[in-house]
Length: 449
Image (cartoon, rainbow, N blue to C red; front, side, top):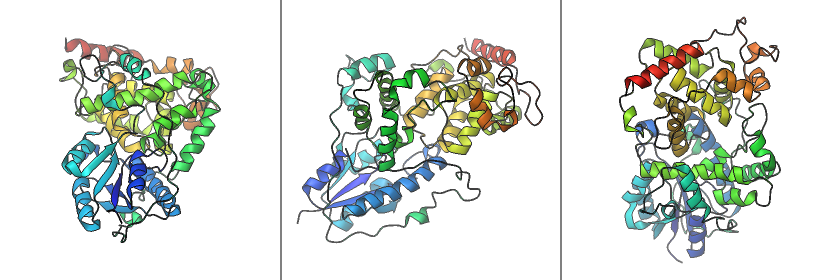
């Protein structure tokens, strides 16, 4: 019998369209492994709480799916490179197969594993090393990236899952998933999460969205409607491949707008691969010493923002939806991020940290690029002086029913008052007036020139 091959699962928790698994299955016995690595990422980049909730359930589904093929999932914990090297010795494995990833800690682990690791593509619509400008460098402007990527589309048709997997002569020991304590307990703040992690659920979600994708462009910015795909956590954990999503909406009217948003995910991955410190440093040098507010008053405002107590209904609805569900509507993400960085003049990295801990789809590339885009500090970003007016945004995108759902204090507010209700018993006053916040932000910008 051939030497077994370790398949290292990371953010690719699926069996279909999984090139590393497919190649290993064709070569001989397979040892599927997931390593919980809280050592290789920088402390600030360790997996957040909401992601850990999703991971627990996704690993449970993956383990069941592997068992149906006559295999099993081996769970280990520790620095990934060291754990995998020990597993190679323990199992006599001849190689490790894995999909490429763009996060800096995964790239570091891949480098440490060296020649024993064979990498495959499948985490992006096209290999990011193929989408380069005329100088052979990654694109820093999304529109140019999209044009270059489009020339390589469509991606290859997704491949099916293996029908069986050969088992090694002897299985290595596996840790117990429950011992990892990924699920929150005191308090169980994820008790209201209404998600179904796993590959089968991802396929169902894609099928449901494909029937609605023709309305995506018209509905995607309306928080009161279910106009977005809500595939983001499935894509982040790799329960479905981006190629499967691309082909899943093929032939549907007006699918191109959605595909451009899918490509933004690749752009964000390319950005953090080219700039590994993008989650920690402003992409634009002029914001290196920007006068963000600090001190007790700023901390109190940050707490109000986190808990949905700012006095701005659209902001508060979004932050409460995030805490209750682990997800927030995309338009509202932009409004709440702008409010934090502009109206409250609080460093975008504080918002990055909160989203990283509370979003089930917290993705390193998207979280970094999107926060810097809204804050105006990035390389391809909105101008800092472009300050979203939350009250106008709420009215423009018809967020009344959304507010009533997530801010029960305003459930009886009439349409003409729902976006800016004035004094309401039990609901806080605005922590900063729109004009005051805007002028303070512009003064801070002017001080840096």
